[in-house]
Length: 532
Image (cartoon, rainbow, N blue to C red; front, side):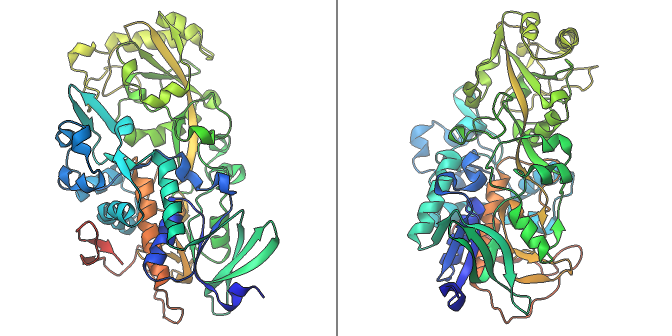
């Protein structure tokens, strides 16, 4: 019998991305003496999707100066830094979440996320020891001498996802969390009372049981599993390139469902951002998130039939990129081209520099070089667009929705619709790169996994991309990392305080019956929020 079966771990965390390590750190912070993290990937591939993220953090604040402690010395680096930042209240954040999901976001979990978002980010900084920086290359647009920021998206982890992952690992190791690599969890173990009591793991030594009083699943969705993608989302997404880790094969979901966990959320939905179509089936790890192609709002996007297929100016890219990536996957060959001219090319985010654009002095010559099936139609599309688009001096404002729209096109472009008229002209290829899946498990506000009998499964918790119900069809940028850390923190705290003998209640079919409790003690950001 393994030693751990005699003296079980207090908390076993499956996965090692942002959410999982937040859970491990939180469990140690809240008194769990023995915390084990099981990472399926080898050490050189550790960290899940966090490594590929841009590290940006969406959170609520009432006054821009509230974020100052996260960015020490920012006034010395950026003149009038706060002038370009708008307040982003809880109502603003929740309104954006409701809007992009068409009101389908889970009413309980979305409030937990929003109301804890600022406190979570401060906790990441203070307890998680995650250094932070302004997200200028992702969400800042320079307007004159001032940087105008996308609402709620000002701060990111220093060195983006790579830095975030390294910081979490360093903090977890410093706090005494044990981490095992190459440890593939095969099953969740339960005792005869139905309480989770450990996991079965396969590693280089073979298969073994590891005992634990609680298990936290933070091992991501099924985006790298072609069979599950095809089954749940469809054949178009089944053939998609994967922007993140190849190790997210849906293992945690499969194991949880096998012991009666309730599937929850949009299993047919996913985050599929536009990325370069020139890359392989998996985005190179060394290039992290720099496969993204998100400046389409300043140009025109056409498919291989030579036609536009989305409203490129529907909203800022941070509110449309997750659904536009999937829209590209539905087009012929799952491919599109983004076209720009010389008057906007300087606005393209720096990540475009990882590809060589196709360049020409006329639109006709540009289209002639593209891998599309109907070049005559593409030329007509561009002439029709230019006929109803505006000149840049008519009020083009790259920093906000400017109302410059077309009239008579299908689909219309409702903002930033300026003519492509100044040579040279540029084209970048794009496809949809799947990052994570929206379907997951039902949890309550304590991060406890709910079974199909509407009761919590004792000793089983979940966080991160395993949580279902938050996102539908679309996704507001920066929410995933904050959601992961928020529910990871809650899961770690719940696991550390778990009493195997307590009587666990049931959950009403439309949500948790217990109201959220406003507290202020121990809140590092000095904010009252929803916490268990």
